[in-house]
Structure formats: C-alpha cells, structure tokens
Length: 372
Ligand SMILES: CC(C)(COP(=O)(O)OP(=O)(O)OC[C@H]1O[C@@H](n2cnc3c(N)ncnc32)[C@H](O)[C@@H]1OP(=O)(O)O)[C@@H](O)C(=O)NCCC(=O)NCCS
Image 1 (cartoon, rainbow, N blue to C red):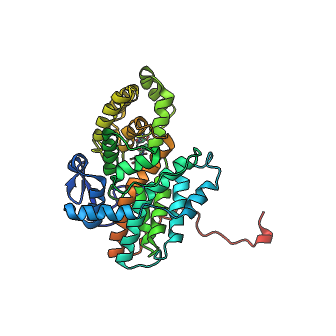
Image 2: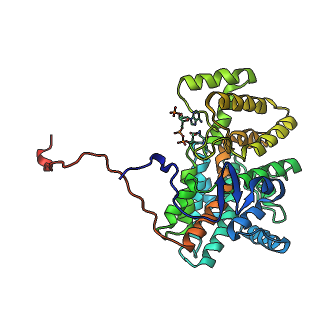
C-alpha cells in the first residue's frame, strides 16, 4: 500500500452539488460568476439543497421558513454570557453553540430525510443569530433580534450592528456569502461527510466541520490575512514584508490553493468589492497593499490569491471585527455542509480509508516490570 499525502488528487466521492473543473467553479452546473452577480444567498442555499434554482414562489416560501427559524434558545444565549468571552475565539464559541443547538432539538437523532431537512433549515437560520449574538455579548451589548423582512445578508449585518446596512454593504456581504457557500470536497465539507457517513446526526456533522474550518490552512486564513495587512501597515512596506516571510519560509495567508492552478475564480469578485468599499471608507491602502502582494507572489512563486485574501479587506471595510471573519465563512459554508450531509445520507457508505503503516515492525514484547 502507498499513500498520497493530504489525499491530493484523490477522488473520494461523487457529488451533484458543486464542481471545480479547469479552474472554473460551478454550483449545480451554474457558473459562480452568474450566481454571484445575480442571486441572493437564499437562492443559492435553495439551489444547493434542491439541485434547482427556486422560482419566485419557492424562494418566498423558503425565505419565510428561514426567517421563522432564526431565533435561538435563550439557554444558548445564557450559556454564551456565562464565559469570559474576552479570551474565547468566536470559532470555538460558535462550534460549541452549534453543538448545543442539537440538545434543544428533539428531532436531533431522527434520521428521516424530512427531519434532516428541517434540521438543515434550523441550523442555517440560527447560525447567523449565534455569531452576531456572540459578537455583541462580548462587547457588553444585548443581542439584536432578527428582522423577518430582511434578506439573510442584511439581517446578519443588522443583528451585528443594530442598524440596517447600506445597499452597497448588503451587496458586498451577499456576494461574499454566495462565494463561500460551497467548494466541492474541501477539508471541512469532507469532515462533515466523514462524520455523518457513520450515520451520526446532522448537528455532529456540522460541529465537526466547524472544527475543521477553524484551522489557518482553511477558513482561519482570512482573519490572518487582515492581521498580516495590519502588521504591514503601509503600501511601501508590503513587498519587503513578504520578502521577509519568504526568507523565513513562512506561508502567506490567503495565497495558494490545492486545487486551482491559475487562479481562484472567487477572488476577483472580492477584489472588486474590496476596491469599491475601500474607496468608500477612504482606506484604499488595504486594497492597494493586497494588489501589490497578489501580483508579487504570483510573479515570484506562481501562487494565486484565494477566496480568503480579498475577503479580509472586504469584511474589514464593513467594520467587522477581524476574529469574526472565519465565523462568517461558517455562516455561509454551513449551506454547503448541509447539502453534502443530505447527499451523503441519501446514498451512504461508511468512509474508512487505509493508512500506510511506516512504524516499527516485529517488536519483542517486554512486560511492564522489565521495561527500562
Ligand atoms: C491552501 C494550501 C493549504 C494548499 O496547500 P497544499 O496544496 O498542501 O500545498 P503545500 O502547502 O504543500 O505547498 C506547495 C508549495 O507551495 C508553497 N506554498 C503554498 N502556499 C503558500 C503560501 N500561501 N505562501 C507561501 N508559500 C506557499 C509551499 O511552501 C510549498 O513549497 P515547497 O514545495 O517549496 O515546499 C496552501 O497554499 C496554504 O497554506 N495557503 C495559505 C493558507 C490559506 O490561504 N488557506 C486558505 C485556502 S482557501
């Protein structure tokens, strides 16, 4: 037996949800460019879960169903309030709160397709409320209840800030949600599928996926991009800073991708939004710095910017705390996880690969009392 480190190039399942072929990303066969420019996030979630775009009536009813499920049990809010949130990373809080949601759902272990779809709806609706409640509670503010007539993107920003967003803010946030919704068999999605392939429940699958997304090589990169840009500080300092990183053999967050060779098709949309938003805030240096870094790394190493690179300056321009960037990734990607979880259940087989054993062989057993 021989292994492939990081399962690179291994096809582990069939899926009808999204594809990456020749650097082109599609959801259910629709080009990500068309969806980003034309769709609300709710339309995309519907698409991922039903493998068809909704008509107007279906969309209205889906939005109403989501709106009905946005409130979270008071016990979860009380639980969040019981921690010293100044030291808790929001991804840890969200992971725990999402897991707790299962304790309040008396259908948690009901495995019919209908029950799993109801849980998917609840999770998709409630995760926004959890992230924004956490963000407010740690600042000593009360959570803001969702407004049922707002779109998903606007509602998130409303619950976060206590005021409705400007149109451009809603547009940018909606685009970011659409772009992060699904991405074939990425690490967190694979995690969710491995988990539920044991016939564990939806809450366990999503909790496991949040854990995988938290890491800096996956969703955790976006927060670290902003940390890097803040450390760089000025446009002139950008290239010297990156050169120093290269000299220290450090990775540059937001750069490179396992699957894309020439470029991540999501990055250009976020680059455009970053340009527009930084011009509005007057802090164009974040955009200028990012472009310089992107061009330099492309030239030096042939590495493309990935989805996390420009999302950092987009979220920063929306006034969002940097450690909320990855939880926001989860607010969107949970739609993909849930689609994959439903797909996995629909034609399940336990996922159980093998390891190439490279440890010592034929060891002579020594009783405990005789071991040195
Ligand atoms: C995304 C990522 C994990 C893909 O990893 P991978 O396919 O396992 O690729 P590797 O880490 O093996 O990298 C291959 C080579 O490119 C280099 N490389 C990859 N990403 C790099 C980066 N962001 N900065 C600097 N060098 C990088 C590696 O050092 C390695 O070089 P070497 O062969 O000389 O040792 C990787 O590109 C990365 O760590 N990027 C930064 C984190 C990030 O933005 N993650 C979000 C992904 S959407």
